[in-house]
Length: 392
Ligand code: PMP
Image 1 (cartoon, helix red, strand yellow):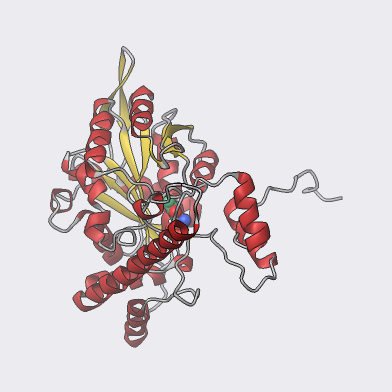
Image 2 (cartoon, helix red, strand yellow):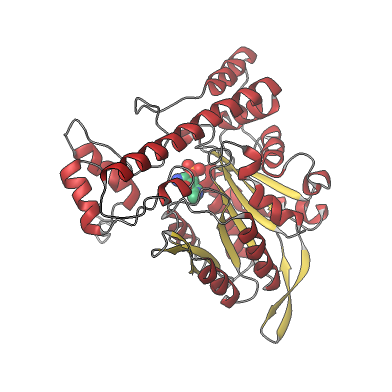
């Protein structure tokens, strides 16, 4: 008899389940649209040239494999915050950001979720409807309550801006609002700069805390600065923020698990040590709650979870971003990847418009940004794509 016999079979992950269905399909024209990983024109995975160069540098230097500190590689933490916010940003200049290296985007989100669970008990995270499927798993497993705000409008295949604003307004004061920095997954629909301003207005008005998930910086528009403009707009207002970063897509470091969690604080003292009283209002009842957002607290959470993060990807990022020559070359390669994604969108739009005479407006394919497109196809139509045309 097994002690584990009472455990039931867990359902397969819906995103990774698509990959399994793809592998099982034997048709030679099969196509996998499920997992968000970049492919070349020949449908192959792509290792960036700058990554190979950075790895060569690392080999030449003969660097060792000693443990990193709990918070990760200092050179990585420095450049990742600078890349996100811009070196000249007040937040950087005044050392108001606490950065801890994380296990890519997922692990960084998970660490932030642990921080919320521990130091903001009962606080809710608002997430977009729909969102990347793993967001819900992350908050569920961290025992952080969440609810959804309206985001996608099936009638326009665009942003339900008014629904989004009114749901954020209706949430309990002091909630966390999870926002996709750019290239919203899975819709490909981002707010305009004016809409971002209004979103920031309502978040400020409600004393909410913005929590950005930045998994596609540079990969959406091709420009690192443009893709970070949403985060920078909030930071410029002096707001405190949580920002998770990932280098899976923009540097193609999927399996290296390299990313970071940044806590932008109102003073450098809080960023480094992390404790102060913060007034949060719950209806008429004002109370002081302790806000511990600093580096020391993130480290405290990371230590028993995984002790310290892996070094290889951190060194690659530090080498690429910290070396002007490699940094420029990276930007070129990123523009190339973003450009290819845009050209694929254009080709798809052109052929759909030319061949489809149903009168459907396909312009959303061009308006959406990044790797993902929400097509508005119904279940039957998407099953037809899979069963008849081998597109999973
Ligand atoms: N957030 C979003 C919105 C994503 O799309 C992804 C990747 N699919 C991630 C986070 C995390 O990816 P990773 O853990 O590989 O960085």
